[in-house]
Amino acid sequence: MTPDSGAAAGALQQHRAGPTTRAVSFLSSLRLAVVGAGGWRRAGLALLLGVVAVGALPPLFVWPLLIPALTGLYWLSEGAERPRTAFWSGWLFGLGYFSAGLYWVANAFFVKAEDYGWMAPFAVLGLSALLAVFIAGACWLTRLAGRQGFGGVIVFAALWTTFEWLRSWVLTGFPWNLVGSVWLFSEAMIQVTAAIGTYGLGLVTVMVAAMPAALANPAVSSRKATFAVIAGFTLLAAAFAGGAARLAITGPTAEVPGVRLRLVQPSIPQELKWQPDLADAHLAAHIRLGATATAAPPTHLFWGETAAPLYLADDPERLRILGEFTPPGGVTVLGTLRRTPPDQPFAVWNSLIAVDPTGTVVAMYDKSHLVPFGEYVPFRDILKIDKFTPGTVDFSAGAGLVLIDLPGLPPVTPLICYEVIFPGRVTPAGARPDWLLNLTNDGWYGISAGPHQHLGAARLRAVEEGLPLVRIANTGISAIIDSHGRLVASLGLMEEGFVDGPLPTALSRPTPYARFGNLIVLGLVALSLGFGWHVGRRP
Image (tube, rainbow, N blue to C red; front, side, top):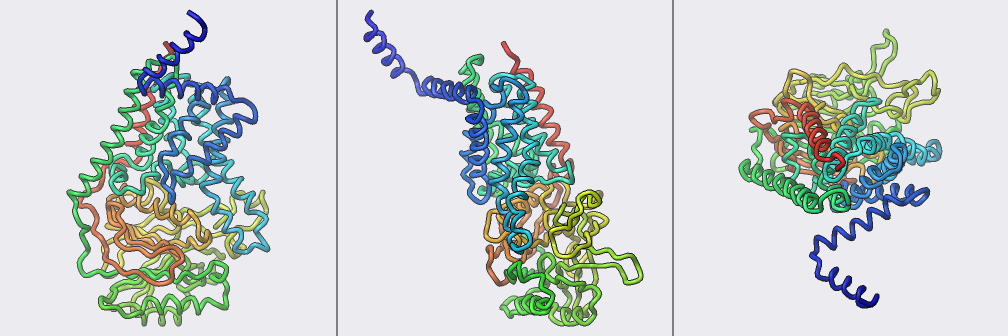
């Protein structure tokens, strides 16, 4: 046989090969290119894959981008020559992922650009570099595990989920942009978080998105790897079908009778919000929107975080005026600052108060989970810097999550700002509220992905806990969310106005996740690690 006839025969054989064989051949070549990349090529590829993965997050939701991103990251990890190479590949992926996903943090530094603008790039890159360590840890342990094929992918997914969970605790925690949030575009897909939480949904998501990597491993049967890929997408389809069935059985959102909420969103620019000479003008803007006449008047009014950037609880005259515009039998709930009496050592809290029609404060809550550098400076004695928000004194942390009673409303647990982003940590121990209330101010971040991502976290907490959630933001996005994560009413980003709506009812029984929390997630991680370790042994 001549060389030309041999080449022709080979080309004919490849043409006759099925699509699966051609796909495996393509992926094998791609894997060799990724694994063989070194130096700046490997570093650039890892960084790029992290940026690509961000396209799957809110508000873009291009979820198929996770497939090349996580498949490539797995190849960089399991094919690394040394574990430390896998670590740095994962760290660079994380640097790209968090820098692109948290770029909006820089906007806060431009509110007072003359003082803090120079810090913006360092803040974003510094935060991203720190968070990237969690992805790096997952990649390092994946390489140490040395599992092969779809078993190795399962181990990788379990380790990714473990480090996402650790990210919610270490150094006070920052579980922003959990990978399970890529499904927020689908009400049906997020229903599974009622059972396995957002971490559990992320475990399945990483497993499915990275599973094509198994097809390219020459040490693993392509038939078994193909089955694993199909099984993974079947699992996602089952989650969607189960969620759709849950929503169909539930039907329309049930409402608490006799309650009509008004969420006031004045959309005050952040650079004006804290100016002392404008405090009364800001209060007047809230009062005007809250007092706007409608066919169905509200029974309760809600303003956002630090809607009154002064010590309103110590101001009887302003409280009296506020009470005059509070609906009869209801309350106005708003964010404000609170301080110790003059005869005590000075301390200040980021607080929520409820004011009745007489101008009396009938309930309050002090934020307990503070933002490092935003509300206090850790290691202040060493760092010698001031916090980012106005004032030189650090905020004090409240006693913890509480259950409060408001006139005319079921018991509620209030959450201020990013307290809503922590899965399994939004209700007080031993007590179950009938709803969650989140006051926030995303005006620091302007028109960006940040407010959309924050809203998404709130929706996931509602599904996980089986509780409705009411969210009020100074510049948006304000929303009433039912216990299945559906938006009942909302007002868009940077829109000035108000939105009225009912208070949805809670589920009659706590969800599995509400009962057992992250014990479910850790159990799934342990099972996945055990199974992946067993089936991923080298031949």
